[in-house]
Image (cartoon, rainbow, N blue to C red; front, side):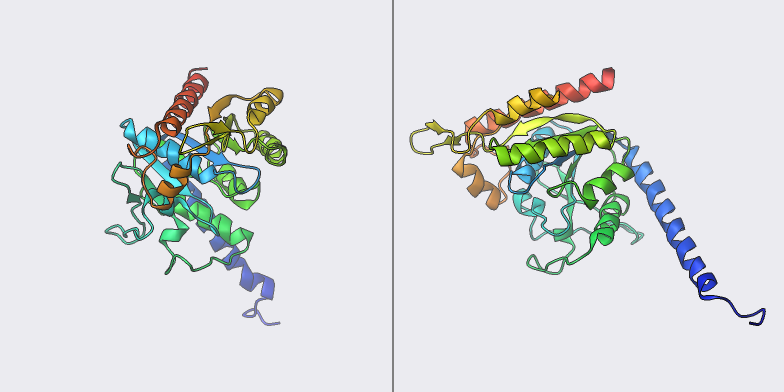
Length: 294
């Protein structure tokens, strides 16, 4: 082999170094953006179908209604629903003047949001990516978006304890903590316990547990029926030694309104649901303020 020849390992080395530099630069950008966010929190669940995105969207909407600057990141790369619930399905982010970053899309109430659903050609286009690509995409949705100064940065996670939650935990180590969403039945509570232990394994704070779909409110007579049971998440929170933030009932009108992108702060949202959501936000902010002052 002459002096001018290089081995395959040597030829690959610059690419590896380049990737390392890109990762380091991306992390520096994430750290810079995170420095402008007063509070950062994630909403997760041990399993799908528990209404986690409804909770994340609801909390973001209430905080924005209270006059706070709020950002909402949808990290569910393969099944994003935040744009639908915020009424932003047909909205697309704009590139900044330099062209290297994009602006998040804002709701009328001021919630800044970004989602993979806003970046695909069509709402029915699937994103067929393996875990590592999804992780990089999550990082880029933080680093390549001009979030600006925020009072609250809320991250809506996909179900489970896989790549996306791990990426967020590693990229935002200074996050305030994570909110766990469960339904009352045992199958959900079992996975919820795993989610709590997952957060603890990452050395992060569990901000509290929310019990969703806790009782069905009849739209005709107003009577409440415990279809899935009630109180299971509260009991589980006590057993696990974490805060219980409150419960949200099943209200048929809420399902219809979120499908239409109507904000959960809208006057058409039944009072029983809005009051329950308000109480959860009050409890959540109290936990965050307590942790901040301790």
